[in-house]
Length: 186
Image (cartoon, rainbow, N blue to C red; front, side, top):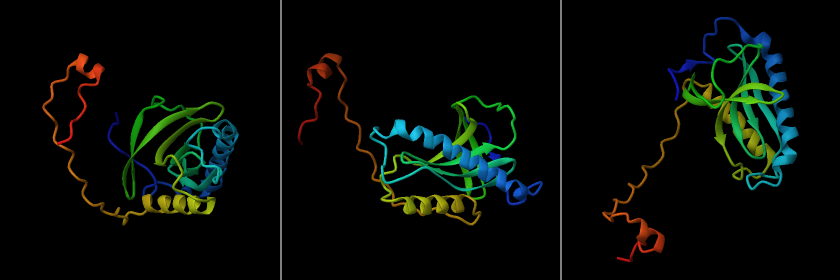
């Protein structure tokens, strides 16, 4: 459950975060090193794309946080990392709505052992839609540019087909366990 959205990476920052960009890039690289160390344990999982590597894309300072995209062989996430050692008042696993120039996105608060608190917003998982590292990194850079662009409008998808009408079959536990509730051809 989330509260009212919090604005991040506003177009008019209260102070210039540009002087913290090197610190933000270093935070992104430190997170990449954390995931690189975890990569060995992920290799045998079915979500691992062996064509990809861990990379920190476009990390820069936004409102006292490092903000960028983390690419791994198993996910691509927008990530916020606090640049100052402050206690996070949000519980691990909670969602928080963050307002970006392109709109509001839901981030999940995480606590990584030996790293600290991060907020992440999933872009892709698993990563099998990417054949190689350059393609994944281009998608990451494009996603980051899109969320930071106040003029961005997402493409409109074709309307989905309506779900089938529910059937009026009474659920009976015994019939279900015996396999008697299968749909019959019409």
